[in-house]
Image 1 (spheres, helix red, strand yellow):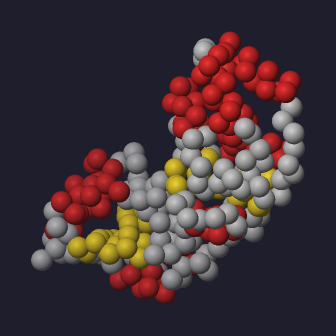
Image 2 (cartoon, rainbow, N blue to C red):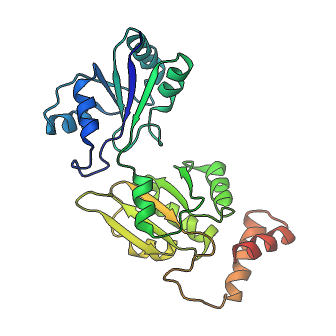
Image 3 (cartoon, helix red, strand yellow):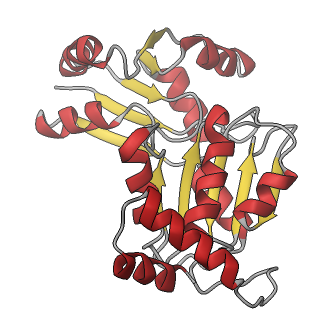
Length: 263
């Protein structure tokens, strides 16, 4: 009889944000497969748990996955954890879950801390039909197309961004989304948690440091929280029209259509 794969949510910052069930499972399984064994050992040590840990991350998934499956098929139980939050949400976990489904190995998911949900509730934006996009592409055409498609989404959107790209991210948000309200959440639940509200340009001006984990919540298209109703600057529109036609290579009709939809 095969064992059980446990997908265990761990704290996104504050070590107290872990369930009693998660602690029990982490202390009773045969192995904890961790995205970063050093971070996981600190968590386990904090609660006096001595279960053996093994690395399981994006760079070794192809070699480690068959080993973990073999142990599960022998009847052992394995807990998968990421650095923070729930495995499988922009973190390793999906591959082993799919493999266990295919091989009919039992899977249990232990709910717990989640940066997207924490940020969503903290934002105060409507959450009907919320869209989670994970991380945007790093660079080039794919990144530009990602922001263009983002501008077409009218519901609340949650996304992550790396600290070294957050300023570029906010600049692009400002360009493609204008004054649409956002909430930037940095280091959620940690000692230096920071929550900034306003347009992307407002948040960029308020940003004092880029250190830490960023979760960004973008309000729905028709949300006008904390924003003034302003008359659109015609000169600004003309400059943007020129940028779309001369730099992005759009025809004038297509450029006007984009501006009309944006404003």
